[in-house]
Length: 195
Image (cartoon, rainbow, N blue to C red; front, side, top):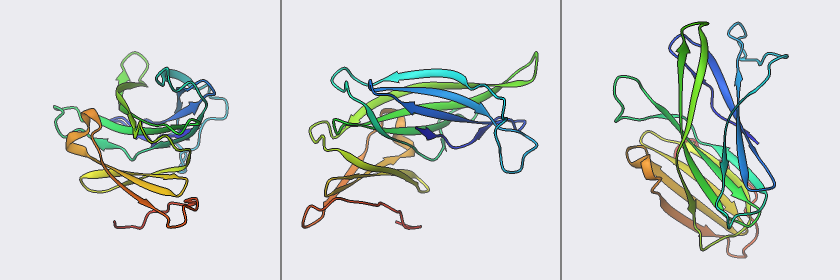
């Protein structure tokens, strides 16, 4: 499972989305509201999460989800007056496949009770490296000014998938791959502050 970055609407109501992977190649999404009075953005103890949606991976990925990782939030520069926020969820499965889901995250007010309603929609999904299914040991994201980078650690291989904000609608990526000389496992993938 993995928590999304915190999102908020125009009056400051905040929430997070929890993505939960299953053993049947499915990811479910649940929303949790954050307490406005808490500086540390704590959750209400008695809060019931709100079910938002689910994502079923392709039929040939009928295996358990092993890793989930949310990208930093970024805004759509082509949107109109209302700024639409996006995030990419990286998903790896036990069969070695890595999938990306572009998610639109936005908040609006429900006038009758002034509670926030979260709109989360799955814009686009794709599989990275469909011909190179190697079990994944780590997924992690790093944001930069104009792009975001996904680091994928696999057995002896580190792959960077670079995504430009301006071309995000279909999740195109530039891939850079390097291997350990002795093919030993890539254990950790900490990012340096500047790449």
